[in-house]
Image 1 (spheres, rainbow, N blue to C red):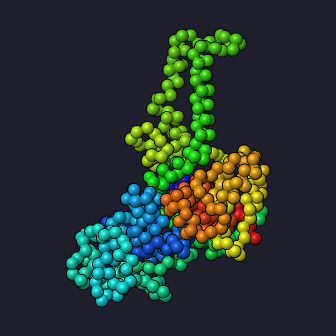
Image 2 (cartoon, helix red, strand yellow):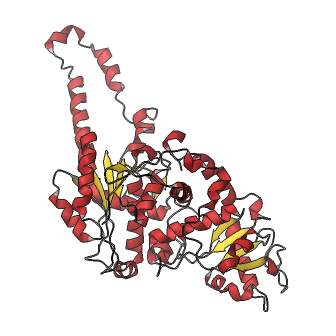
Image 3 (cartoon, rainbow, N blue to C red):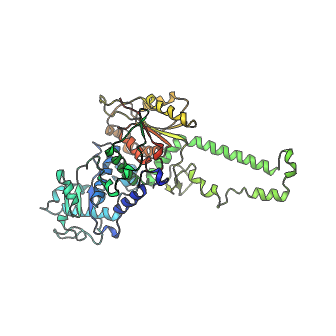
Length: 488
């Protein structure tokens, strides 16, 4: 979902999204389509941000070699919790976002790997052990798994299912083999797919500020930034019903009561105005313009706010409290029930700046980051040019940053309400403490809300800041820029 004009996004964004979609959702039930199959990177050695960036690299490899990328079902271990299990998506990235590939391609890939793993003495059998962890193979396009040892899926020979490893990856991906399994992680910063669209990364200026000056990006950085923005826009293009619930609960807890009080105040004020109009109470100077009974009745009938053909009824609700998620029952509307996405923006307290404070995950790390005060210096600089800027969407895993924000009383800090770290610790340990459902849900919800903010302040070396910047470059906020705080 791309918003804004073409000029407000990275060059060729809509063209790239169309082409990626066509590659990932091929016609004819995936028949004849070559596949690149890969598991999600291991959560024990990859943060959530690193996993998403690795998936972007895998998508680049698939696009470059004209293959459909299939992320191995059941391999996204951060979705292995009760919340995703309840919606039938345990271990699947689909628990949080729309599927990355056509179901027919996924079914075909799982069945082909299972068939190859079951064929003794083949080159693929030893390398397809990962398929054992996947769900039971579904029937493939055009047929099921053939019973013969020499046959694969839908007429594909078992020797057409190969494993790409080490230095052979490029050659195997470029081959005409039907299914390529990539067991190890692709190159972290693979962005060679950019060449499919020429050099679009050269057609937009770099709007990254560092240390109070525009920070020039070199050719490689521009190319990588363009591709990661396109890949992440596709992978995270639409939140699932489960993630919608998480976002709505988070927004409600953060600023729901404040918005509700404002709405209630507006309702009271409008009722007072209607009462004044009904009493025909006008200033004596306008006594000659006082309406007669018939005119008054017609005028009051025009205030039928339940009328279905009005901006207030049909258009403006998209900017209201429910934002892009509309309640579909049953029962009374509640923020923790399932909402359906209807193509409208998430409601935000605007103007708002997203602020991501980077943490050092390991105690004793050589990397040093500034405290919250160092980031606030940039925010005060923004306020010189945007005097109405008052709201800050703060994302941080450290509780000390939340407490520190209370010292800046002239700003309104908004943040998710979930357990945070008391100090530096590995991500895996933190996730184990608070639970995957809480940590992953809160992280992804914060990511999407930060991407919708009017401005953004972060750090260049943070994977999470890269994710936020990438999504903002393809949702109409390219020229709002990225203000980076120097690390030291």
